[in-house]
Length: 124
Image 1: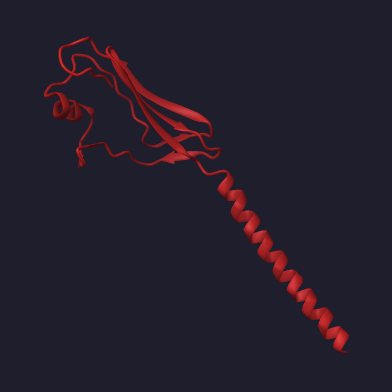
Image 2 (image 1 turned 120 degrees about the horizontal axis):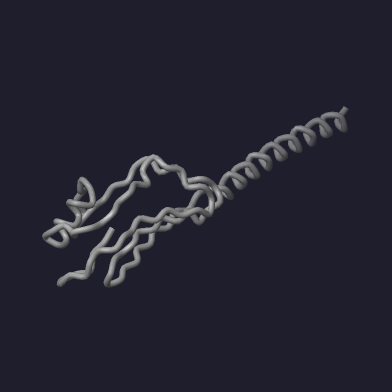
């Protein structure tokens, strides 16, 4: 009788340990496919580019983007240029990453070239 209860107790403990191990494995597997977004900015005298790279394996869903200058939100690139340069460049191009999905190991670039001018180099 005692041997029977011990066998049942050991069986219940084995099932509990197996269920917990499956839970930890699932949690680990989900962490393996997280997205990892990296933001880089490159500039040259003729222009600049902003690049977002999903260096993770899983897809990154970009629902919104906030553009700040000195910690204050802006309405878009024209306002950023006006705030930083006191004018807008004669030519620049823009696009948006908002409402996009970046698959694993993919990138999105925003950049352009502006004519050389006195003062800081600009683009986007």
